[in-house]
Amino acid sequence: MTLASLVLAVAVPAKAAPIDGLHFLVGTWKCTYRAGTVSLPYAATFAYDLAGHTLRETTSSAVGADEEVFAYDPQRRGWTTVILDDHGSATVMRGTGRDPNHIAYRSVYADASIAETIDRLSATEYAIHATVRLGGKTMSSVDTCTRHAPSR
Image (cartoon, helix red, strand yellow):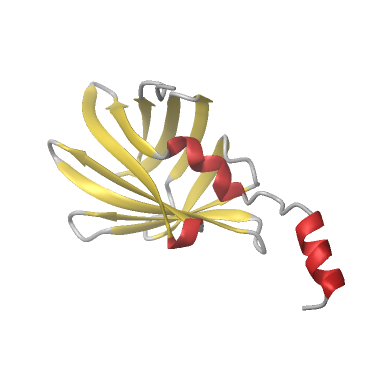
């Protein structure tokens, strides 16, 4: 590396990757899933993985658990999330845009009828709105997740 290249690399700030915008999720959240009359509390824990290039979420509730991995592909300019549940099922979702505060996903595997939007509402709250086609009907759900603000 030449001196000019080294100086340029230091002088030009690196543009933050969209995955960095999900840092507010790192830690543990208390969530509630609601669909119709069903209400299910669960815990969600987020941590960066693969040297900060992916964000891993693990969830647990009284009825099961899953693990999700979030990544941003700058060449495709989009998000990918892979969801694995404790029954061995997998779902792959794709989202567009760079905004980590509002990600709209569509499933691409195994069931292409799932649409999901994740919205950051504040530093201590986010929501997931989802729809899925089951048995010829569309089911909607909302997850709300909160946590206490970190102490300073």
